[in-house]
Image (spheres, one colour):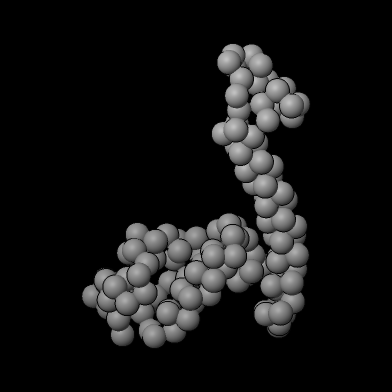
Length: 128
């Protein structure tokens, strides 16, 4: 059985995050020995799953849904598909917005206007 400090060091997840994950139900409450949390090796797999979902851009609430928002017999593939489809659409919209931001910034870098007022119509040829 591992202490919270040992889990934190091996997983790279801060002890405060481990306590938080436990408090909101992402991690099950570990057994206690002398009042101290004791984790089994399975905690690393749970943390890896949480990390995967975070890297995919899921919020804590979405991760909670992934783990606990489906009937227990729901296959992992169905859980991912239910959450990933709308998340992918969200990411694609963000990428479109980022592309627009990049284009606007590139236009401002090429700006030859003498007054800021001339730049207001940045989609016109004034700042190109």
